[in-house]
Amino acid sequence: MAFPIQGEVVFALVPGAATPADSPFAEEDRHLLRADVKPMGSPIARTLISLPGDADAPPAEHVYKVSEGARVLLAESGGTWAVQADRYVRLNADEAQRTGLWTPSSVDGSEPVTTSAPGLFPPYGR
Image (tube, rainbow, N blue to C red):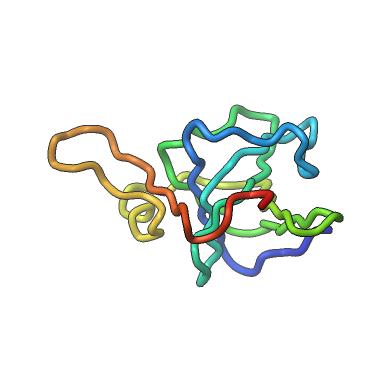
């Protein structure tokens, strides 16, 4: 089952996170990745995101925006869900920081780090 999401969705991939091999959302021609996802006006949730497989998966150190066409996928067995997006763009640092999914690095000059939202919602599949 799939339902359209009204408005924009922003997401940041979770670096090094494993994707369950037996996910009901796995498709041969798509990337299925763990991400912190934030639909417009909603809290951040950690879930799976399904992205087109015709290009490499995007780097985890950035935040991305889906302007339109995102869908919530629900497993027929219930209890698990994912977000599917067909088009997305990388946000610049100012836009990414406003989402709450990214924080600039400290003054030491190291690379920016992605923040995660553990504890806001239970992990996928629980």
